[in-house]
Length: 284
Length: 308
Image (cartoon, rainbow over all chains, first blue to last red):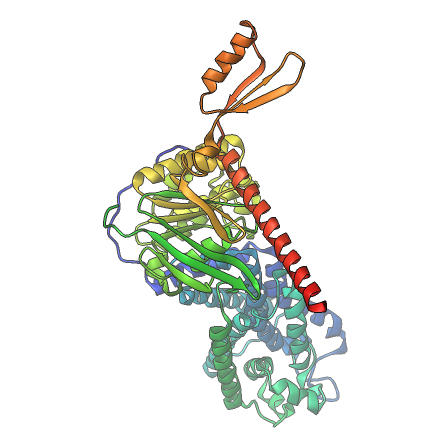
């Protein structure tokens, strides 16, 4: 260490919340891609599952075809919307809940709490990171679907408009729910044990791993309480032929309900995040 | 005293966790540009006190003002004027030293130059290394660097040199001295009493949640605690010592008594801050233990009286 510290004091306005939020997004995204565990369990997991399902069930022929096996869609095409929905949930809920619970217990939040970083900038950073990584993930999934699994993607602009709003809505909702859920684990170590079962059960009952339309009614009803079912349904409406809508609970894609359910969960997540978030457990 | 208000003002600070009183009526103040060392054994209430000043904890009672603001109501502008080096933490650290400092520098309106801080913290060779790959002492330097990057008016250093090798500790002292020259006010806690003596202008010793002494580094503990000790070995092998404010005279008399022979193992010891500290803390523990015994004896007495 050399002993001196110099430098002139330049008058400058304090950096704005938005500017710091953007700086946090870059920092958080870099952090995300340097954490191998997170990367595997939240970024690449949908790819792994898609590969497994395609490999395991393709021999059984197309899904939703006629009795003679003609028509319908390939296994890969059928699972693609579910994997997109799972990616949104993992990038938001699982990633943030585990990440923030860890930051709470390893001192990261305490350090940030002692700086002039506003919690709002911190949230912007987290949500922005989820957004950036979820877009990369979805884009990569679509590329794999199109060019590796040779799945035909929709060409109608309306379908892509639906995709855009379901995706944006779903990712933001997931991010808030992740922040809210991070308050539950008592330590960073227990975070994965608390968060992963929740996320896993949701994926099973919401039509990600199992064909939603083949699940018993009570399970479909239970899943309808949670947002993942609606994300998956919205994605099915984009990527599956319209003939598949008949198999849904009400015989249609119910996009209005998708919007409503995601909207309600977004508000719930926002409020819970706002109420439960602390830089440190004051008076622990 | 001048009319400049103190940077830190603590009056009758109280903090309880349930029925445990961690801090019981601590008062002190730190003036601008001063380095104040808060010393005391583990669990004495140092960290609780410092975390109340940093705004991390609520207090149960008393008045606190830090840079003219009650830490309970400290906003972001207030935090921008503080530098906080917490006790060691275990962050994942998968960004490099430069990335981390550059990012944190962005939080402040007039941060120090990142490269300058990296040099000052002795991290030049590690600048492009991820923090997770650093040794404990190097990570601690990063903590210190992050604490000063925002050019704070008041710097909190909570056991800053844990894990430093002796050379790094001396370099750290130089860094802190240069901050002092700049006029930074510093609140330091440390278990290294030589560090407190090197850096501190004044010290407060806290034990059992109470301030048991406060004063300038040279005067704390009172004049009596600083009387030098002369120690030597007699010809029969017995170790002797004498506490005296005239050590030279004692040594001269000793030499005369030995007919000019050199006394074996002769030492003149001026009590260091560490010696003064230990005698104060031990004295306090003894008093506390005595009070407890008296209290329980009283209680027993009362029980007997009730029975009778």
